[in-house]
Length: 574
Image (tube, rainbow, N blue to C red):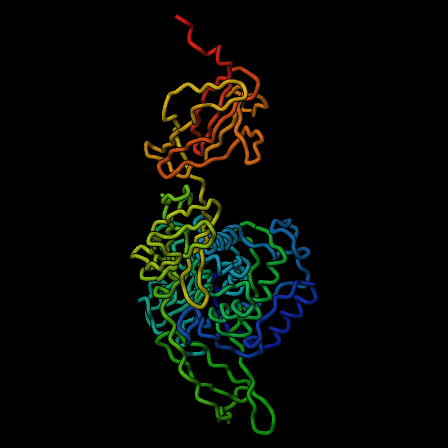
């Protein structure tokens, strides 16, 4: 193992030909293209653009420590679009150790829950893990996902790498003089201090644990509101991890390769990389039209400095100054807020179903939680809530839009909703953040007013002679929880048997405007919950009939109607 580490720390001779080989390998295999964004992929080491790096503008997560440049094999494991459950007989390079693969997929799910707009694919984590540590040295981790020995990069002492003096008292990297990149995802301690995660629930944020490291890498890549389904954002994310175009191209080649298909292999049986490398030297012109290799200045970390170039003659001769063209002064980069101060995501804070009856108050209030770029609750974030729909529903105070500032626990709760008079569906949208705002949308509904009881206001018998009008009108009152139920829809149906609520084609009836019989009416209670039915008329068929009244909310009332000749109903003579 020690020999392997020593091999990894050797400087390689990676050139831009490696990047070309990556593209050629994928082209020969028929792999799907993974387009690079215009600009950063042109060649040579490249600083991340646009002020959207994961950390400070002059920083990278790994400190530009060596990375593996093994390329995917020419023959890929299966056709594009295949499932991830490929047979073990597939290419060995497509096999990812079980714990490592589980950590990448768990990180994808965790980020999707707190920052769905980022659209982090686990295959990108797998590509970075392959390039940084060969999938944790072929999956050599214990049952908790921790490497038995730390995976360490070289000392960042300014000799070929950034100069980063110790920031952790050697706690993670064992070096009390300079920092070193640590763990399967190769975080330097100062970056881990801001981005470290506890993804396996053991109470520790351990860069040597693949679950913790994978989630930290995922959140780091998503920083600044990036959408990793957009090529330019993905390029910026990878360059923020290690500011080298060759690194970007190598990660891109593995990303495309893993998207074609992978399969799980046992921990410890993954393929070990064969050749580590350092960022590529770039040739510079020399007098006479020839070129000589000049190392590109490596990126530095906060508090570090970039070493000056040191060109030398081929063959190891004495050094001589190489003229360089004058350069325009570079404006100072915009400071990037630390991740703890950067808004990251918006999530539901336990809002239940949103439903109320017309004119009522919603029992549930819309509540969301703001989180920072590290996934921790974030206070003082303005959240705007907006009602959209035609039900007439508004927030308390008669407003369609309100803005609420999140509390210390990250929650922001909208005012109560007051249902309008129209029934139907509507939405409430919560929005936070600028540039690329995060949005949550909640479905809500307004239902008709309800009554749980309906009674007649008098107890008079309802009798009419054949072909005559009933002398007394039917008046009733609807209530809900003991209070008058205003505006409640009531259906009145004349039936032969209330146990079988089918409209009767004989007997009493209402009349329409043209005087034709009607035996079903849709009515609504008044402001006091009272409803007076239209006049009822008897036809020529004597007998006993029933009027069935039903309301929204399930209240029912059956009223008996009698049709009989006058002599049949007159009291006997004395």
